[in-house]
Length: 477
Image 1 (cartoon, rainbow, N blue to C red):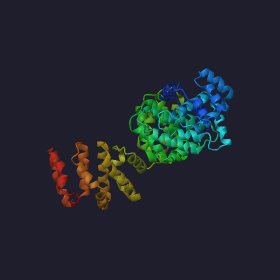
Image 2 (cartoon, helix red, strand yellow; image 1 turned 45 degrees about the vertical axis):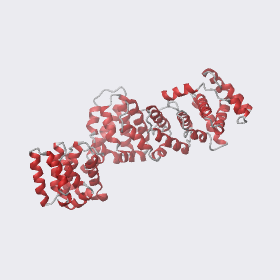
Image 3 (cartoon, one colour; image 1 turned 180 degrees about the vertical axis):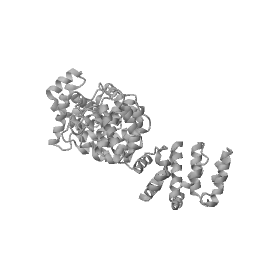
Image 4 (cartoon, one colour; image 1 turned 30 degrees about the vertical axis):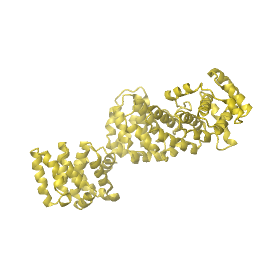
């Protein structure tokens, strides 16, 4: 991905990247609504001078507005901001916001007219605009967010309080049922993240990253939305703290690799590979094991043989490949196993089938109050993937053989009960591994019951097997 400097400055682009057909359509429909400026003047809500200025831009063509703003842009920036502060009618606020956007459109340098207002009043220009984010109509918050984005991007020292208020707003909008609103919110983030200082603010905004991850994971988005969201993560991962914690908290590496493997658009692969490179460069110790666990190295080997229109893709792929090859020997088998387990994407990788692995590493499962056993228990309870259930049950069996004293703990956290239930699972491999696990978990007397279940399974008497865990109390086995 193109950079303009050695660190993390995003390539030079217009300050505001927000371009949204839904917002443009709303703007077109509202632009010609009449506003009672004379009535405001008669009510002494605005002065005669303010009235004359507003009449000069009311219902004017884009060319006429351009000429007025070219002559008196600074005056209008102050006027529009003052009017936002003292007028409250929704249609009036809509009109003022449209005019502010017109003033800034294609003229990034005019943002300074608004930012300079802070010299006389430190709450300006953001306070009245942030108030607009709380508007209840469809238009005002969206238009205000675009303007705030432009101002934050134009500032040499962005207002971090304003940025946090904007991030709270985008967090809510990312959960909208309207795809156009979600798209606008993501574009706002893409733009504002240009400013390095705001990235930690976003990272620490409650539920903000969760909402962005959800857009990528829950309902498969379009390739364009995939690109935009991952672009946000790419910029965020230039921050070392974020690169250190992102995968640990949100398990993004497995999902990014999945998306890359299925991607048709080259730009989606490009931004994913660039994000993975950031994660390795900024926090290798936190991310390399997870990359090894999801088989990123063979995927990079495959990518390195393809033809790319962008040479930077190959450069990033070769970098990842070299780092993974160099560090793979330094990663312990347990580190790779742990990364795979925490990703919730279990497969029959070598550690799961190696008695030597369990002999060497079973004590690791006792650490942090049996944290890894709790993860296995959660997967057994929540996963609907037959492969995950099979591998998790097998891991429980391996572990209990090495640490028989853990049986009581596994019963207390519900593993024993769940294993008995899975013995009647429709998938044959799940049934097989659950029976093996139950054999390890129960005492001598209970093994007669398991032997009976095995006999019933052999004769395909699954209805009987399915009811056995209701007849036999698990804590008596």
